[in-house]
Image 1 (cartoon, one colour):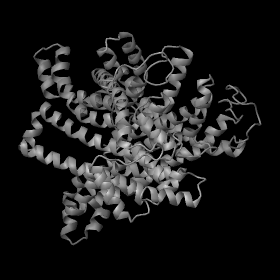
Image 2 (cartoon, helix red, strand yellow; image 1 turned 60 degrees about the vertical axis):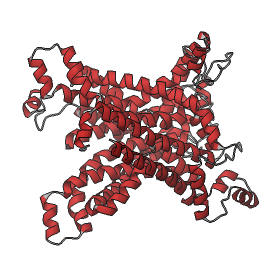
Image 3 (cartoon, rainbow over the protein chains, first blue to last red; image 1 turned 45 degrees about the vertical axis):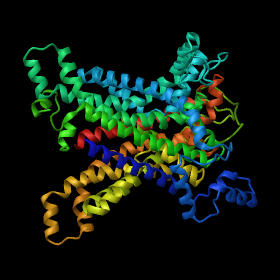
Image 4 (cartoon, each protein chain N blue to C red; image 1 turned 90 degrees about the vertical axis):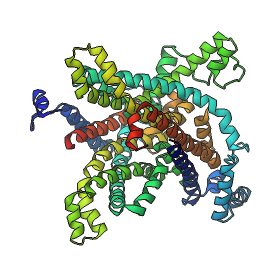
Length: 340
Length: 280
């Protein structure tokens, strides 16, 4: 166990360094010119040259790479061209908003995914299953920004179910004292139920969309693994013993079917944190790292964008290590199979 | 599922199987979409006649999808966009398929160091959601449709390499490959003559899904402003142009391009799922 733990942290370190190297390659070695990009379309050559000197882009690539890696290990992701602030600080102040949204979205995705997946498996090859499968296809084939836009139009403008998406709280509410950075939790800690309710309502809308968008892969996995479990020999044995279907579904079906979901959560979480997030945060004016990435993109701030992408990659690798450990705890067969 | 189960459900060879009707519908939708994308712009132009008609007209007989704020016909623009978006889906899927399966097969056939290096490289790529990778690549190369297309293709190649490699590994241990090796075939020869043709089925199925994801991600990049630049008609950038209008009550400038994305991406996915069941 100790040895495998060391091996895993070794793999994690290699992965994290790999992420940093890959992003350097992409931003510096591809034929694009960051100084030219940053200076904008109408800059003169002198302005571009000045930017290049200011950010050390006139140095040899190897020197730049060395500096970049040293900074990376000191958790310094460089300076934003747009704001002049350290990218690391800017990302960290915005992280709680993204994590709050991401966690609720992940919860919604898992509940929705497991629920629909099991429902489809129980009614496999029948109408309910067909409908769920069609829903899955449409949920994964719809552009998330399009669905979000239509949802804002319907739920806010037409029906008035949710307030305008203008950030983490509706107009007229003051943000609670920061403790965790999660508005709902902070408001509860401060004993302000009204603000907590308003924050939760505001949070729920983008989280629902992000959750819906992330659920299809979970539905697919849960459906196929539940079907496999329900058609297994052990489930048939339970059936022949006369156990009720509900008991068979929970003990033979679900408990075995949920294992692959743990691995899949890593993918889905990466997706929720990053994939759909830039688009959703921008549409909902949600002040998280996704919106930061969007703003940096619009202002051609490659350094800030680079910091965002590195944060996503590193988070994803660390998350997968944690999930792998969770998987070992949940399924002892993994450790046995690896001979440890 | 045993053969008897299959027979009981009517899945006898030669008959329609469950899911076939969806797949045929998907083929039909895609064919109609492509045909209209070719024919409609030829007959009626691509709708880029600004100010010819009134802006923001709701859908009607004359303008089935309505007009946008510049008075351009959204139906004509959506059809003209088929040429970019669906072509892109096919092009990305094809290049990912060719490059990914060849590298994967070579990696598996060579084994050892080559394999290890290629796998570590793909590992790093897999730490990013494809759309984020495509975003940073496009942003570094510069905002253009070509760069966005290249970026999407790069982002989906590593998973394809992994898939092709894992299938190729199974085939590499087959007897006919061993026989080829014994009779003195070169490693590259083995990879192309025996491993690749037998392994390519799975990457092929995967590539139809890649087409669907590519359409979605390309539209997302254009929506974010780094892909296709206006006024070129493309679904993602058309949705972006309609953002201001939809919040003021005109839903059609964004709704119809988005439903085109939905139709084409869903078709590719249904076809992919169907091929997956059929070929397995």
